[in-house]
Amino acid sequence: MTINKHILLGVSGGIAAYKSAELVRLLKKQGAEVQVVMTQSAMQFVSPLTFQALSGNPVHSELLDADAENAMGHISLARWADCLLIAPATANLIAKLSHGLADDLLSTLYLAATCPVYVAPAMNQAMWNKTVTQENVETLQRHGVKLIGPEQGDQACGETGYGRMSEPVAICNYLADALENQNPSPVQCLQGLNVLISAGPTREPIDPVRYLTNRSSGKMGYALANAALKAGAEVTLVSGPVSLTAPANVQLIKVETAAQMYEAVMSRASDHAIYIGAAAVADYSPVIMQPEKIKKQEEQSTLILQKTKDILADVAKLDKHPFTVGFAAETHNLEVYARDKLARKKLDMIAANWVGKEQGGFDSEQNALHVFWEKGDKVFSMTDKTRLAEQLISLIAERFNTT
Image 1 (tube, rainbow, N blue to C red):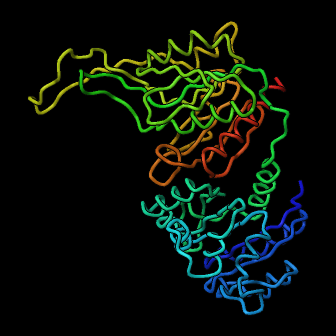
Image 2: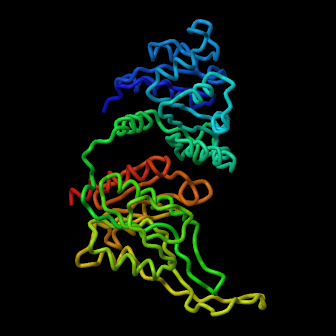
Image 3: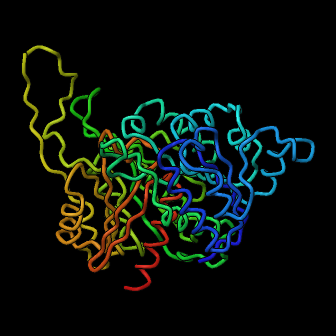
């Protein structure tokens, strides 16, 4: 895979800046023309001379460059670039970009750039998980910025968690794939296929005003529906209660309870080539729904629950069953539980993701997936759900066409 593009690489001041030197080497190796912009703090970690030697171009760091025409180097650099890649992007830089601040060359370039922008965050896990950082990241994503990473693992501070900058080879591969797909091929990988997708949570009523539910936002399922449409499929979307607008041209079936979702999916599954079960369906529902609001009287109250029907397993058992893709949201032992679910329910594929305070997934604009099938697996790094859905749909089409 080659990158015959002009890449403007922004380097901000974090220990991960040392990885950016290898990133420049890899980008050049794949045919890219690279120019590097460094913040003042970045130059405390890596010498500009290193990037100059690797890129073959002068390194830029001053907002008002007396050597540039009209001293407006940031404008000419922004117009030169086919894409702006910022790696590493510190918490401070992400905050500046999300609020439109422009007090140095790199932040000003971001505002002046009309090309695609990609950001590879790098920071301590506590900083990454801070609510304000997540809000800043979501703001950038709403503005069209694409995230690459971060990854989970050991950090320079000695702690472990999300916040590690993605490895240079992963960033390079992601960028090559993204730039190649900016002008998608007219050949669509799901052209003419009927795809059934379930999304969102279910609500299991306890009484007329209360119900059991979960934190699923439906964002991943809706992103998958949009990606499948773009891939040429005819899409039916069975959705639990969410605050999202369904993509145009999908057949939307709204449901509320697990039983309603079961009926909606099972009555349609045999007419579809692919079923993607992205919904977070309740595992249990109350045996009895009280006809009137339960009053707060006793110190303790007992609620008796019963198992709901297993949509994924029952779809896979159909005589005329579609290619069935499940999801698994796990807090620990992800691969063990995902592979067990894959085999036990006789699924064709399963897409597993971590959930919890330090993960993506529920309520987040981003996610990472580890996808398993009988004799293989593939990891998709943390990115926005739109991009992740496109990657997963491409993999599903590939596996569907090999079965």
